[in-house]
Image (tube, rainbow, N blue to C red; front, top):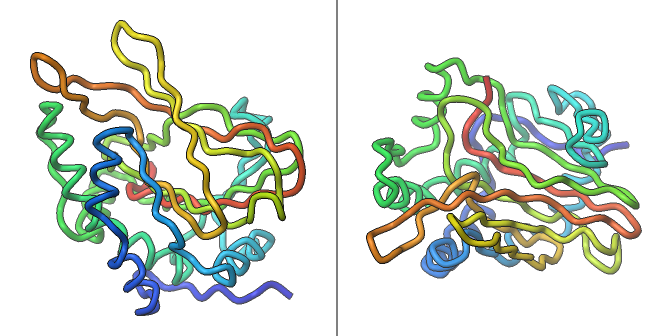
Length: 248
């Protein structure tokens, strides 16, 4: 029997909300500015991770399943949750968003982009819905031996929130080997830079969806980023992806 995942639009247990609010968001902002990614340690408990991973086989929770090999995305598969999202997923999305809005708005200002994001996630989702982006984008990914995820960007429509979050639900060394999170940054007239973020079960990585500003001698310039997962050597790896914009 699959563990139960309740589904509502915005609820979250106070203990998890407190955990999100208690993260070192100043350090996260500094790492995002410096590297385009930042780790948040111990965001979910092992039990929470195991419950989410065990729900992968519950078809009622998802709107679609993607075979990465079939689409040329890599190897492995993932599923997009349907609305209403499970409590834990919806709550994380709601609780994480306001901590990232200041970075998102500051980045857009530095890059000369006029778009600004509202303080509450529900207001940003209303903006997406008005533009025809109404399909939920949080997803659960599953990798087995030999699986990997090609470098990519999660862009689903006109309205894109510039940051997203991935939470590792499996324990490296116990559940799988290999399968590191990889971020690459393409800098103008320079070679690309790679960043590998080492995570444990329950850790999250916050990272740029597609672009971020980098200070230069004549002001800030844009760099282009892509993310992926290196080849899994053994075991199974589950990841929860939190994307804040919805899809067309």
